[in-house]
Each structure stands twice: as structure tokens, then as C-alpha cells.
Length: 76
Image (cartoon, one colour):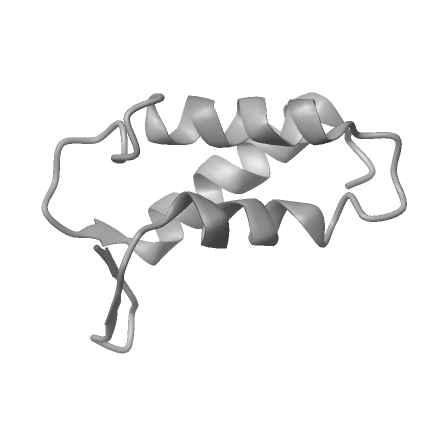
């Protein structure tokens, strides 16, 4: 589960994470495999966040995404 600052909760899924990655790299030379690799890195390959929490704050997920995107394409 991902918890927002407003107190809401949303299920943490690979598909949502991948869709959040696709937007900033839409017109960049980033392969689909690279995006999948970033998702694997964030979720630890198991479908669950690397941090063992029942609820992960949304800003953690945003930080993971930004850090990962910076590593694969600074413009994105």
C-alpha cells in the first residue's frame, strides 16, 4: 500500500509504477527494458517495495522514481 500525505491509500502495483516512469521518458531514448529494470530495482523483483513496511509513504515512491530516472536519463 502507498499512503498519501492526504491520508489516502492506494495499492502499490508494478503497472502504476511503470506508467509513472513512461511519462517523463516518453520522448527520450530509454528502452522498455530499461524502464522494466528500474521497476524491478524499486520493487526488489518480488512485487513488494524494498522497504519492509505495510504502508509506504507516496513521497518515498516519488524519491525512488526520481533517483532511478536520474540514473538512466538526466533530462527525463
